Structure formats: C-alpha cells, structure tokens
Amino acid sequence: MQIYKEGKAAINYSDGTFLNPKMSLLRDISVLFLKSLNAKGASLLDSTAATGIRGIRYGLEAGIERITFIDINKDACMKIRSNIKRNRIKAKVMDQSIQEFAASETGPFDIIDLDPFGSPVPHVHDLLKISNSETMMMVTATDTAVLCGAHYSACIKIYAARPMHNELCKESGIRILLGFIAREAAQFNFGIDVRLSISDLHYMRVFVTLKRGAAQAVDSIKHLGFLASCRACHGFETYGGMVPEVVKRCPNCGAARELAGPMWLGGLHDRELLTKMLHEKGPYDDAKRYIESIRNEPEDMFFYSIPALTRSMGIGSVSPKIVVERLREKGFEASLTQFEKEAVKTSAPLPDVARAVRILKK
Image (cartoon, rainbow, N blue to C red):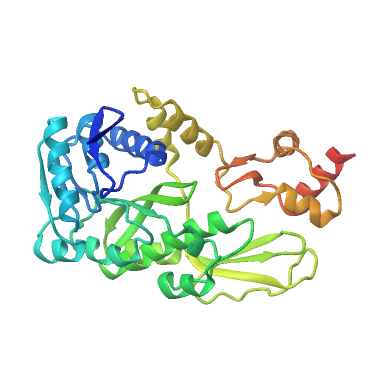
C-alpha cells in the first residue's frame, strides 16, 4: 500500500489506480477556486474520480459536504471508499460510467468536476443533463496534441473545429474547448460564463458557470468566431460569427493566412474572482503565483511570440520582459502570458510591437 499526501488529504493508491503528482498545482488551483466561491453547502460530482483525491481535497479544504464520486473501474471505487474512510469525510461512491449515471441520476449538481484521460468531449453532453442554471463545470482536456493541431483531422472530428498549429496553439486550443462547451450547452438552453482558464504542462482546464435561458445560450453562441494567423509576419486577427467574411491575405505583409475555429472569442477569466482567490488563506503559494500572473494579463486575445517575431524580422531575439516594459512606457497594456513563455500579450498592434523590438535590439 502506498500513501500519497497532498494538501490535507492522505491517499491510498496502487499501480492499478491512477494518481499524477504533477497535477498537484491544478488541484491546488481548483481548491482555491471553490474556496473563493464559498461553496460549502453545494452538491459536487467528481465524475472521473480515480483515487478520489480531488473530491476529498474539496471536502477537507473547501468545506464541500455533499460529494458524489463515480468511476467505471471497480478497483478505483474500492480505493475511493478506503480513502473516504481514511480522510473521515462522508460521500457517495458509484461504480458506473458517466453515461449510466446521467441516465439514472435526477440531479442537478451545483458543481461538476470532469478530469478524464484524453478528451472530455464524450462526457460533456451527459453531464449537462444533470446540470442546472448556476451549475459550475470544471472541465479538463489532456488531448492537447489534438487541440493544438498536431493531429489536425482528430480536432475536426472530435471538436468540429480547425486547430492552429503554431505559437498560438495553446490559446486557440483552449478557446476551441470553450467553443465546444458553449455549443453543447446551448442544446440544453444554457449559456456559459467563463470564470477561469488554465493551460499548463499537458493539460487545459476551464471553469464555466452555466446560465439558463434562450437569450443566454444565443449570447454565448454569438461569442464564437475564428482566428486568422500569418506565418510570415506572425500577425493575427479575429473574426466573430459562424460564417464571417475573412480577409485571406495578411494586411501587414500580404502573405496567405491560416484560419482556425470556430472558437470562443469571449473572456477567459473573471478578474474579480481571481482577486478573491488570491485573498484566500492556506498553503497555496505556487497556485497563487500562477493566478496572479493570469490576473495581470491584458484581456486582449492572443499574443506575440518574440522569438518567432524576431526571426521573421531577420534580427536576434530580445527579452520578452523588456518588450513588456517598453510597450507599457508607450501607454499600451502588456504582460507575459501563461500560453507561451517567450511571448507578450498586449493591446499594442503588430507594427508597434515590431517597432519596440527593433528599437530595443539597436
């Protein structure tokens, strides 16, 4: 028997039950998120429970009292029951698939956590059946190679969207994921309110609140659109709507542009909620640093990879941090971004970014 300790939880696991210590930061962020919502009286479904570590931490650290765990693996369910007892929390454990559970459970749940192996797509539709207005969905995708365009055809098949396979792929991938959720939610007369979006390591995770009503569903669909990106000068442009008139040639350099989407073109974060997360008490220093860096990002869509930009300009690269400082001096919003280490997210248009880079290089 192996015991893994994380947060306030002590988890019994074995080779036959999946537990990834590298996901501890994401679990810390998720705990902080629920703490900031003050969700103690909420009902929570851990729909891909494995060892139960997420739901158990939500109970111990965020005070969630009504927790249901489901997993299709019988050995996993045995481990979950053992871990519930070890950590002294009360919960319900169901040995079922998500599809079976959604067909038999009346619900609704206030919070639904979906963290499957691979794509969440096969499960979102069923989980929406046991949701209601104000249900919080926390959805993880680990098929980032698909969402980032390394498997182009797979993204078209699974997400019904064209991916972007360049430096913008992580942000476009997370927006494709959100776009899929918005389209599925609209079938149930839900709109979505995006509260937080995370891209790290091999995963993407989004936190959305469902909003009941035809008007809300239509409004979310209106937030869908496309990204046009130029491989030559690395300029980009977004186009709202399901069938927009896209300028196929880059207005900066005249080269042909790639098109990705449909994807979510609305906001990725709730800044007020991020501030609440930073004020929560507890040993979550790494998670808070991550959240603070996201909060400091401008709300502008997409970013400029400085190495890619300088290569296209035929000059040596410069420090993205210094580019940020230069753009701020010129009155633009600018910061580093979670999506790319050597990139700058800014309100400045491409010519101003290129001018700042060229001056700094001199």
